[in-house]
Length: 126
Image 1 (cartoon, one colour):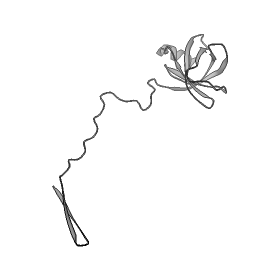
Image 2 (cartoon, rainbow, N blue to C red):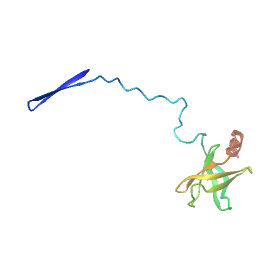
Image 3 (cartoon, one colour):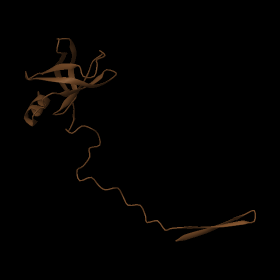
Image 4 (cartoon, rainbow, N blue to C red):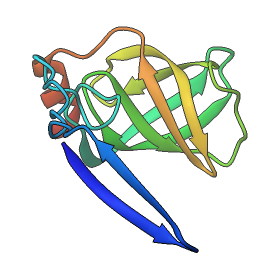
C-alpha cells in the first residue's frame, strides 16, 4: 500500500492507496489488421482505358493506380458514390465497377469482380 500525507491550514490528512499492478498491454489480434481498408496491393501506373457510365457517358481515358480489386482515374465530372461504371482495358477486357469515392477529380472505383493475378499483369503491361 502506498500512503501520503497532506497538511494544510492545521489539518493533516493521510491517504492510503492500494498498490495497483501495471496496466497490461492490449491483446494482440491473431490476424494482422491492415493499415487501411484495402486488401490488395496497389500499383501506380499510367494505363490507357475507357471508363464510362453504364449509359455510355465517357469519364476517363487513363487509370493512374490499380489493384486486383479496383482502380483510380481522373474525371472533371462530379459523380455520386455508388454510380456504376464500366472500364474497358486496351486488351479488350471489360469490368463493371462502382464509384467508391471521389476527391476533386480523383475517382476511386471498386471492381465488381476482381482481376486475377494474370489479368492484372496483362492490364499493367498493356
